[in-house]
Length: 345
Image (cartoon, rainbow, N blue to C red; front, side, top):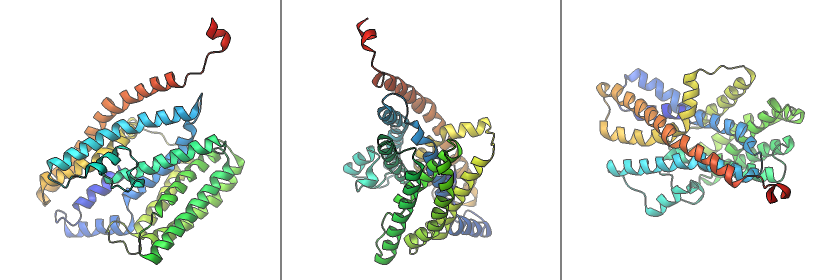
């Protein structure tokens, strides 16, 4: 929802549809001070680090993990990709080449030199990279080793700092936030080990890791985006987003929050919402054209209703059936072999 709000606001700010004072305030808030989209993404990475590594369990855990992630991510992703291409075609926007479209099918296009057809896809490629790292650490029996996880937080932050410094000196933008976002995911893993697993070494390492990340954050963002031409990509707004995400995430761990049914429903449809809101924004911006005070509320209402409504449909008709299919497939392909005596019987 934070990403949706940020993207919707970016479409409205500067359009002339808002009163001048409100437009200036929102521009200052969401462009200069706090990027809500990056706040949502940072929270997403922390949550991933907190929960995903502990999906590796049971018989043939890596196979179970890979299959589970495939059925969880790819069906809804492919549907959103088809939807995005349809919107591009219907609105007369430039269509991607066939190679770009095919590479987007893999979800790894960010690492294969192809553009994301939907901007938010870049986070999913990072998720896959994190999954691969978790599987490797699990294979090496290091995934629950607090010292290793803490070291990865520090190394990721230092690597990001090095790439950001190189960006600043060379003028060529390097992917500093790739290692930094991976480090953020491992912060979530370390917090899991400390809070839920009661790992004493993790508890000792959490403060050190947090200090490293909190100090590195403004340095990385300042060096990486000091000359950004994008009005909503600024060092301060990105730094504030990452720092606030860490604070909010730790706050949720330290309190007994009660989730209402509406919050649980929103969590259930959140992945689909993340995937479809961008194409809807493109479609509606073409349909409504330049926004005016008279069309502002219909535009925003349509954007929210269509995004949430289609996300609910995707969750019910695509995600849930595919998850059930995934569970059956996992049960069949990862079943423990029968003992010889039982097999012969």
